[in-house]
Image 1: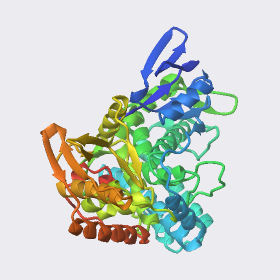
Image 2: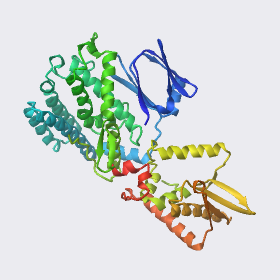
Image 3: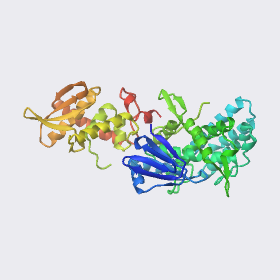
Image 4: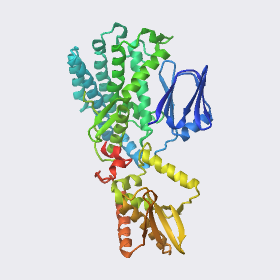
Length: 330
Length: 166
């Protein structure tokens, strides 16, 4: 399995012979190219065309983030898996309203059901989440009737808001109050964690899409404008509650992440490098967590579950088997 | 899909799993993370370095041709004899491709790791069988959806497995 590499320091990433080489103040690091699957750049990192060519040849994708940990973009090497047939099918399911809404609904349902699983877990531990569970359920019941993508996105927003409202009850931590959802940049600590986690997940899903025949520019729930990636946003919705939010709950619950891991900039809050490292370590840990897959009859990681979700989507597009989102069982 | 040339590899796939034939026809290639595919690529690169030249014939890429006891032989080299029937049909298809160009030669299946070889010749029955397979392959490829997943002994090592069971 090829690894994800995270670069936090400022420096220069280059090709040296047949390896990747990262040089920054007091640090020289060789990264064997066969071991690298993707690179996350958080620092001020310089690179040149030779490097980009090398990444392309080795099918390595590179994500870059700004100072706030906000996702900026991805170097997505010329697609190596290409099937004209699959792209046509994907476009067909985007442009035919009925087909598009089917997938949009499935994604929102999957997301809501995973949210309910998370809430159920806390209900069992005696947290007062009942009224919000009901609220989420009532929005979920409306999903089947939604007629157009905007309506669905609205419901999705309602579900998420009802869910975030209960974070204060779950976390019981005055430092990390929810208040309201703010982004670009976020205005408090908890929102900073949510935004950072979501950014990481969008990139992780994009990396998995790269290993399939799907085109990341064509999403079904989120609007496609053919300039940015949207399919990763769609699939990430399903996994946010079980990957991102659980990462946040673990870090705050164990009191690992503290006030000191944030800095206030002119516009809002950002994680410090130390904070980002803490978050990423826990996030990677979650992605590596395995569950027993009933059909494959072996343990698969959450990262691989994302890929399987994409395979399910491909099979749906090919008309083989209707897409059913993954729902966590605990 | 105006130009489909059925190569020996597609014949091989057909005798192992028709579903795979459909995927190959749509260029839905398997997952490259699969270790066996990596191994295959390394072996291929090595043999190329060692000076083994491939011959392209129709849709087929032939491993090796050589002269033995004054007779031309086409070789097909496989890692194991586990899928003998499929391997044999693949090689016979090469022989048919030669015959279509007016050259009648024999072939040899070889499994270097098992130190086994087998000589094959194209019989009229084989020829009829191959022609039928060609038609069947075209029929499969033109189907709107892939043939349903059916578990075979090959699945365990197949790079499409996760896709099929997902």
